[in-house]
Amino acid sequence: MNIILFGPPGAGKGTQAEKLVSHFNIPHLSTGNIFRANIKQQTPLGKIVKAILDDGKLVPDETVVEIVADELKKNEYHEGVVLDGFPRTVKQAESLDQFFSGNGRGIDAFVTLTVPEEELINRILNRGQGRSDDTPEKIKTRLQVYHDETEPVLNHYKKQDLVKEIDGVGSVDEIFSRILEALD
Image (cartoon, rainbow, N blue to C red):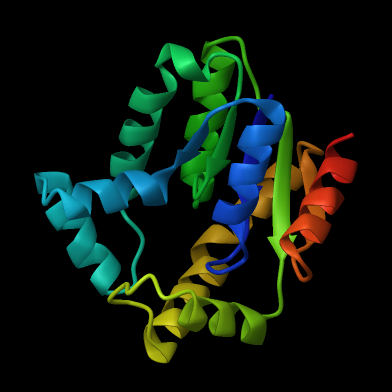
């Protein structure tokens, strides 16, 4: 099963992705995790990504698509994957669709978590990851970038009738139950 987990920063994608991974026994591919690992290791990619993220912007499509395509070619992803943080633009979504169709696979579900903006800001400020862009001003910039550049991906997958909209407010288990019900 290939699942895209979607939503704005702070919606709980990472938390729900871990539960989906455990439930379906498929790997989790998080572009955020890949970027954070590269930043921590101070790789050339990590230095570029850090500068972009510090400005509250998105990593260019070409870079992200290349990283994800390389990762998805690995055998561990052939039985399915939970994608988290990708695709973030329509161009990335189109590239992902092409990748999967070229490999005889497809997206089974596009799960989007909806959370009110004030709740998102509070969650990000309280999660304590210590990111340089976890300030109220930078969070608002990230949310604006999400609305402008990322939200159109939702419409891309609505046209394919793959979208499952989930209320992302409540306990972790309540939200997970809603996701499983939608995937049934």
